[in-house]
Amino acid sequence: MIAIHPAFARLGDENAFAVLARAAELQRRGRDVINLGIGQPDFKTPPHIVEAAVKALRDGEHGYTDATGVAPLREAVCADLDRRLGVEVSPDCVMITPGGKVAMHMAILMFGREGAEIVYPDPGFPIYRSMIEFTGATAVPLRMREDNGFAFSAEETLALITPRTKLLILNSPANPTGGVTPPAEIDRLVDGLAAHPDVAILSDEIYGRLTYDGLAHRSLLAYPQIRDRLILLDGWSKTYAMTGWRLGYSVWPRPWREVVRKFAVNSWSCVNSAAQFAGIAALDGPQDSVEAMRAEFDRRRTAVVEGLNRLPGVTAIAPKGAFYAFPNIAGTGWAAKPLASALLEEAGVATIGGPDFGVYGEGYLRLSYAASMEAIERALIRMADFLGRPASANASG
Picture (tube, rainbow, N blue to C red):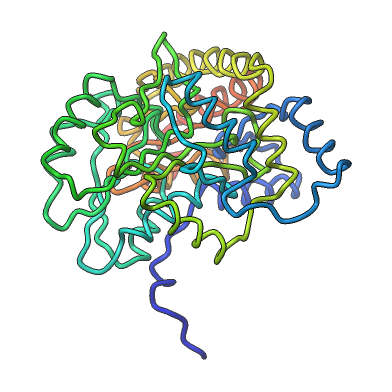
């Protein structure tokens, strides 16, 4: 057999897609499965955004665009960042990407290599660790603690930085925990990073529009002292229910912009042209659908947390952002992945086991409340029935 590069053997996976596939298989067999596993809004893309893409196609926008994205879209991104966050960004520093993953892929490839260390949140989005290990760098987990609201600690973060640290990855609001780091903690981290000027920062802010309890998102773009080494990741997937459009963006320090452009030319040439015009309509058009979705997610969040805390052996703190709950299931006597598997196979409820998000994920499940309220309520009833059975009726993990 022809050998491939050994780096490919180090690639991890995103088990949410495996669970999605298994749930679909069970449904094809006639099973009723409620999917709380995949992080995808159950809303449709707002009509004015769809119409903008249709118009672009009818107007003949069928060809290549600039590798960094069409200028009106990059300008719309800058206007949105200024309007929402009060930060000024040059369109020359914006890169439109085919989804947010591509931005983290680029950033991690730029700084990951043998002998380097990259600090990443754990539990966290599984692709962080996968891509770090792909590059040959050492993945250094930054523990997200339940007793800290799953926010990162500035003190713990700074303590992990060594002379070999090349990149620090941060994510707030966070997947899978829903944690939101308070502004004062971000202030402390940025102050401490002054002692580490050679560490680049990737800030994944894809859930920045989804916060609750009156919290406002604090972007790392708001700190001019780190702008020369900060990469911002954001996009349209979560905010505008556009997961399948594969449209994201990133903001780069000017000295790295040309390298990123060349990477795009060598990789994907440009993003789908019609999707880019849909992105303009999303940012420049009415934002009422964004608030309507956020308000509905908030309503579901309350129902999920209350329902989880009624389950035997389960406790759940209220997430402050995104659309995930990360309940502690230690009291059930189950290990996380066997419980997630049993809930899917026996109760027809798809969830994700905490270890799929990192070494510190054991003892937790991730539930997405980007599903209908009716589906959430039925799922909680099924989970209560399953966990309420006599121990002999369940195969404990």
